[in-house]
Length: 412
Image (cartoon, rainbow, N blue to C red; front, side, top):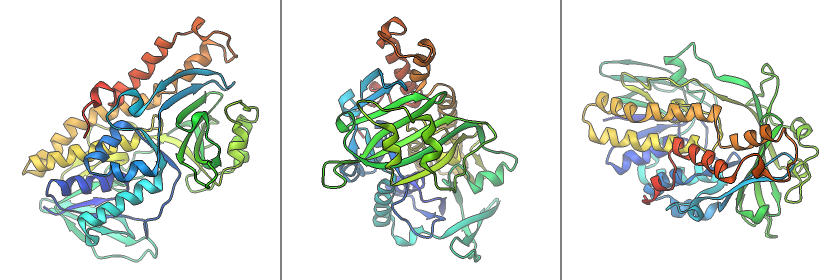
């Protein structure tokens, strides 16, 4: 069967290598003219690392990042709310690793090149449309760098892994748009001394008054013991004032919310000001849909279930998609049966994660404490909410997202 994958990102490459493992060939078409080490940080949670380990990639990836040992929640006044062990420290078979997204992507690209061959990975191919009939799908591309038309490509089956702004999904659902509720984000990386031991994933504040996520992605980045620290700010703004994906971010646009955040464990304004690179973008998702396939065309990853980038779960859910879809295609001779099996396994579960990321993400802990304490410093948090109650909130999110310790005891 001639399978085409649209998009050579984390999910597209994961799908290609999962199919290759099962003896099924696929060809990837990526819009970028060339693959570079771009982006900022990503947290590979234990259930995502389990999928990558099954592809033989964990030994390559783990040394390139930082193994997280703690997840810490703080108020915007710098007070610790709750702390729990993460990854192996929490009993998982696979670690939780913070790393540079570009390193993850280029490592996967190199592995796919070695396994599939260069003729199976095509860059500089931007999909502009497709048509399908009973016999297959015809895809139309232009060269991204020049806009010149490229020869049409014929496929038996097409899987769209082309992200939140998926061309395939837009053709199938032309009246759909992203959902923006007024939450804007800024993201950067800074060279900084290790924070809270250098193995901690930190959430401070809330989207109501200003939230920041901080975690390290490269150790001893300068030879002087400093780390490359990824940070992301999230603030609720005017719902009509939406950040631009294509515009570089500026420290002065996000600093007003954090100007007084000088804590003994981190000087947040200085962390933001010292950033080497800042990106701005809106926090958006799309309403879950009940159908991910139309004839010989199907969606996976962010193309299927765009979700708020909370809880570090988007890439994990996409990698699970790729494994489930590859299993279905290996188990069914009829592609239509395979796609139905894939949808039956994944659509409802992914929809639940999308809704939870909107309404009850991990940082609902911060929001809850902010409401209970009237956003004031506290002397004894237990008089408002206990650590057991906070732990239950955290464990509830893990259950929805599919990475409870009991559920992931078996390594890949």
